[in-house]
Image 1: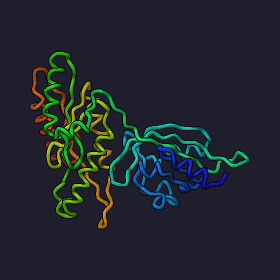
Image 2 (image 1 turned 30 degrees about the vertical axis):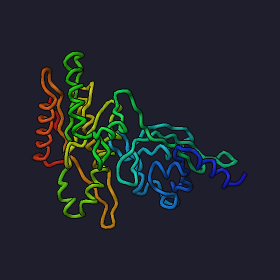
Image 3 (image 1 turned 30 degrees about the horizontal axis):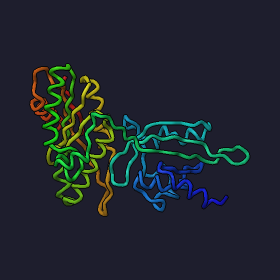
Image 4 (image 1 turned 60 degrees about the horizontal axis):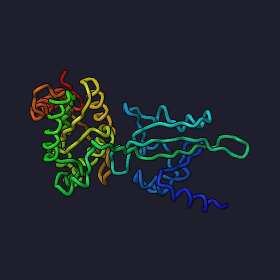
Length: 299
């Protein structure tokens, strides 16, 4: 069997697959990897996995390429590893992927490199909204593809009933991109739109299947987070903040990254969700006053 034959088999797999040698240079990048990460084989092969491309981070935002790389560990001890990490997509946003690392060995049993298989984590439940249905009913934002304010108004009615009759808890996050006007002024509105899309997709990758995120207007986003307390809401907000900070888009002029101020609150008994959104917005404003790029959760 030839090398070309095996590559044709690997390229037929929808999962992403890549190989690297003991120096962590990527020697093979599959068609599935191209689709999931946005980078072509020509852009990746021959590069070090430590280069500023995929840049895997964990849910806390820790850079695994510098410390804690599962592939590097697998090459050291020969053990198979599995993990969920956030990968940098060529378009700038973060994608939650499930990875499995294997050692590659020669005929003498010596480790000569490692292989990674990865697939996007994209779980759905009955509570998650159907984007195609929302598009038909004009309930999505045309730029980001997220739910829009009209949808959130209807979702709020549903959640208010659940809070009232089922004693369900609901957290609300208000996400405001910092200094977004300067991005538009310096790089143009097309780049600003790409930055908004990057932030939207990064946020969606950080959420649970039951969470609902929307573009509220301009550079502002609102997220409904059911079944949480203030501590868990704060943890989610910090994850989103960190992942946005670690995302970037490449333009002809520069690599552009943004940060976000995130306010959050738990909807109180007998309170309208509209009131809770306003309070979360106020907490995001406090973040702006505190230097931006931080979270403020109402206790």
